[in-house]
Image 1 (tube, helix red, strand yellow):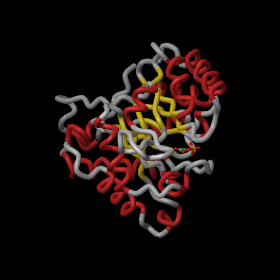
Image 2 (cartoon, rainbow, N blue to C red):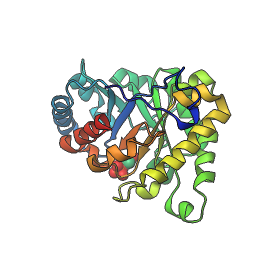
Image 3 (tube, helix red, strand yellow):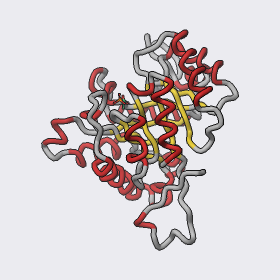
Image 4 (cartoon, protein in one colour):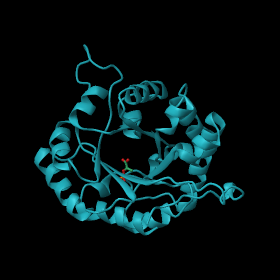
Length: 272
Ligand code: PEP
């Protein structure tokens, strides 16, 4: 069954146009798993997710495991992503990894602007913007993370923060380029805390992001861009979150580190 994402606001168009945004479930493994453990996990996932075609599945291991994981994933339905990149292709940039190197290692995706990078490594909208440019220039699909922290939510700044992240991180791209991106709404207070945003809380922000995209590039682009939710997603809450009209997938941290829990999320996505 193909997952169809229909917008209430498009009710007048629904008979003419069916909006299809394929659900995408991505696992962000963060700083976890050596090469052996990473390959074991994807071998487990390959078996658990065999035959799934209606949901895009992606894993994002540490850089050092990418090429071995790519080998293990060859010919399967599971995609590969990096967790970050630098915007220059090559040169005197000690410690960095570039878009061409991620491609060379077998990646199709890259996470950009994760809140942990914004929080601990000085990532800004400007660096995120440069990284998106580099990703697109080399044919990588950027998964661009946006979202407010707890203090910002509690002081009523959620929409202002998300607007700042979306408008400034995604500034200067054409409609065609923007269409290729994935946006991940990740309220920082829900990441790794076990506190999931309610489906209604998440939907409210997802719908806001889609309206921002519409303002920037028109309705066709807004309808095409997939917006993932991230923040303590697990098998038990996937279905309810993904039943929201503007939630098109999940970016998963903790629950992506085990085959059964990540595959459970994929199953939840198939069931919604
Ligand atoms: C994340 O780090 O992107 C994330 C959503 O983590 P968790 O699922 O553990 O909250």
